[in-house]
Image (cartoon, rainbow, N blue to C red):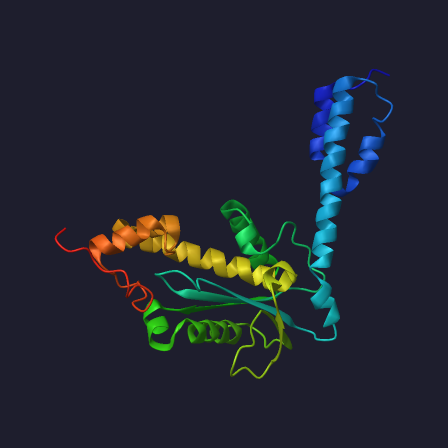
Length: 258
């Protein structure tokens, strides 16, 4: 029987579900052509990377399995604690048990493109998602720590169902009666917290991009309100705008005579 061309084999491998790659690759193990061997090596590596990713994700379910007796496990995280401008945003996410979300990690470790893709997948797969937003004005009124807690309480209260347990990224939220577990660096150790991290980060980034259009002189779409040199120079040149945290920028004075 005539052998298939390398381009046909490549198309076949590309269209094969990654879980089935080993059995398809086996069919070409005796093909001595250099091009086929190169393709097989490439797709074997792809499958090995996939297996490593599954192992990493499995490790991120340690806490979810530890508390598996609780029916609704909710991950909590926030974004925007450190910026000079914009809100702090918290997310609460309840995932189905043993959810698989490839490449989900602490949102800070992901590219913007990956975060956006995961945001959509999380929103589609989650049992429930709650988002809490606390404004810069409110942050100035009660301080950033209390604003963090307030955003988290809002997020929990916006869930469609009451969680049985909260897995939090390194905090215990006051005035919440639900059982809580504080996990240091939880956004890299718990799938539920990592999901909340992505939802909070993408939500806030989208808001800051919109603020960038509203207040174009500050470049919010680029630095998302953080204290970049360009942002600091803009504050000195133009003063504060309505979304600046006055308590965060009190030592940045507007330059006189401009």
